[in-house]
Length: 273
Image 1 (cartoon, rainbow, N blue to C red):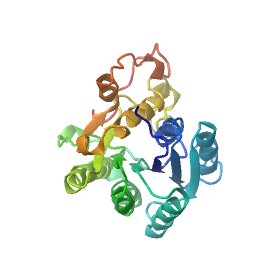
Image 2 (cartoon, rainbow, N blue to C red; image 1 turned 90 degrees about the horizontal axis):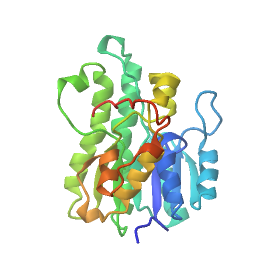
Image 3 (cartoon, rainbow, N blue to C red; image 1 turned 45 degrees about the horizontal axis):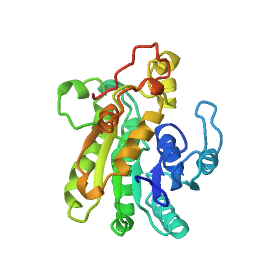
């Protein structure tokens, strides 16, 4: 019987979107979720805070620990990991979901935006994984899951927004390296990426507005796909760059209509796939 009951998940960016969807799916099993994110006050354009997410997680059947964390800060991450271990007794799963995006070409990319993407996406993922690993190495079925794309060194993925692509591929390079480094110790390290755009605040506010959201799938498909990965034996499931619909198909689920925002709309393919 596959379940995340009693498992502790440390999820960055879990106050909304894909991170929250993964948290809620785990909560339905009775998991413990560390909501590690920055939003503590309601934002006019971004739904949810660490506290509202924690309430939803507990309503779904899980236990939640909301912690304000800027993953650029070693002190914040150290404090959050320590609080997680003190509260729940350990960490079984690390989800690197927090990310910054700016789909700008080279001449339009301000260096502060470049730095933000690399500090959050690549450096933040490395830092959070590094600090969780001592606890993961003690866990029964430890997983790291990065929300990042398959590594594909083709010009077309870099040319439109090289700074962003480098930052996201940095997360994927963490998968490649850490999967190899910790394979013998039994830590499963994988990436998950969507086939289509996902109806999140980033899509709505930064990319294509309501029109693109209608041509997207809901975050629930990512929550479900993540659950299938995280309930697999970590020693047998590592070093993979998973795509959500392929994970679902491998579990016998091919009708993905329930995850469409608008079942009549033609789905918009995601970047990097």
